[in-house]
Length: 249
Image (cartoon, rainbow, N blue to C red; front, side, top):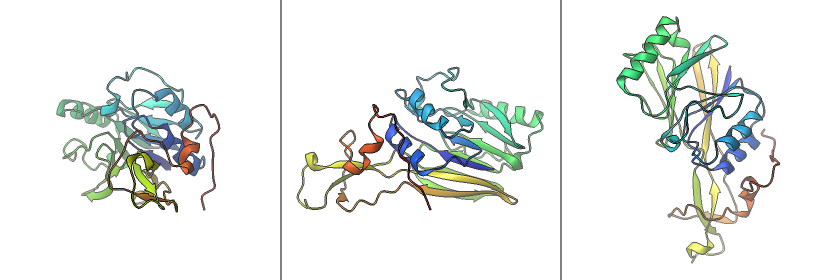
């Protein structure tokens, strides 16, 4: 099986459009690790629906005003202290930061249902430490929140931080070594992961959105809310229903 996995959008639809344009419809499911943002859930899931596969997600700290009972799109299902089975694999998830009682409840329900933890993915917004006690032999733990893209193996479990799709880099024009804030523009340099099943477990490949722009130089400061560089404006116009795409080798 093949999954598209990412986290931390923070009300930034431009980064979602940019990722969508890079990836073809070649996934069995999409896994999202939280922090949609309260302003954009309908548009967010409408974009993901164009992948024509199920979307499984959890909420993060940016989503506290969103109800787990709201159905934003027929293809999207929240994993709120719950699980689903997909082609012999179990997907389980927590929204927010679950306490020990909630963890044991979900783990107990999975065991009662006969879930094989060696074929189980645990999706959360926060990394859950010490999960071996409640989920012995867990194959894969996906999470976000800290915006640091990394993966490591602990006993039988692969821990994968999905990084952040909404990474905005402030930059100045290359021809302006002396610059003001008014000269700066942002570009999108987020990241996501492609997860594939293998005989020996899961293979995870981290992907960075392309962000090499010849006419712009990153600056040390970060200015949220400023304009995009011209090359990124195609992703940011909410009035434009088109979804630009380009082929990936």
